[in-house]
Amino acid sequence: QVQLAESGGGLVQAGGSLRLSCAASVRTFSRYAMGWFRQAPGKEREFVAAMNGYGSTTYYADSVKGRFTISRDSAKNTMYLQMNNLKPEDTALYYCTADPGSVPSLREREGNWDYWGQGTQVTVSS
Image (cartoon, rainbow, N blue to C red):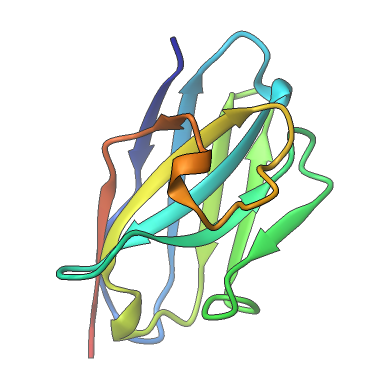
């Protein structure tokens, strides 16, 4: 059973930065593709970013490209999302997700990811 725990959310002004963390309780962290999704009030959950097991390949939604950076530390079994130049439209509940093996080919579909955390709230004020 894979357990994921997000942290690092909070309230920040527009233009500010936050770093989210996702701690994974797995034996071999590199065997899992990892990703981030977010869900704003009244909206569907949407894909934000993903990376393969070794962190050599990354994917981003167009809305965050150039502002967000996904990374992972295998020694700590932890994934990160560095968010810079935050905008009010980034306000959402951010979820960590994991899937054994490669990043799902249809990575934007939440149903293609096996494991999910409980989420951490990010609020960006204007």
